[in-house]
Image 1: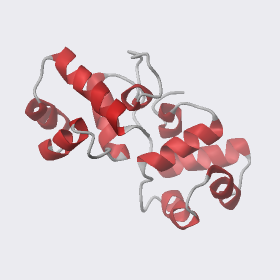
Image 2 (image 1 turned 45 degrees about the vertical axis):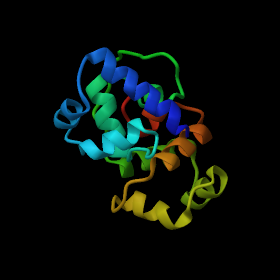
Image 3 (image 1 turned 90 degrees about the vertical axis):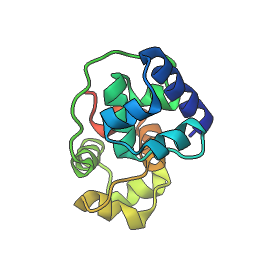
Image 4 (image 1 turned 60 degrees about the horizontal axis):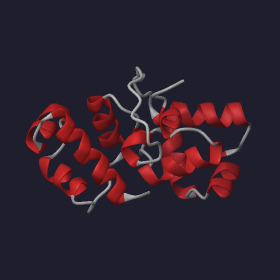
Length: 145
């Protein structure tokens, strides 16, 4: 995950929209200090925060993170709970939780919290799932079909 690329893309989107960091914070419900840290490439957002940013700018999470160079203006779906997406991947791809964690390089200790819906995964873990399943991050999150 590239903090600098994310910061650059976010900065470009803010500039193109003609808004301030404060206006972005107010519109998304995110903390202005966090947005500042994102733009300085000092922090990466949570999954929830990056979804809010992608929804606000009507772009893919993959674009924001620099995984995809093209800013798609597709219609994105509301994200279901991550536990539902995890169940989808386990059932469609026929993996056990242990096998998925081992092969995708995910922490076993967090997997069951994700499955039970008690904790959200980190952005890094979602990216690992996207790489493992060879699909966009937005698909892992349920924003696209």
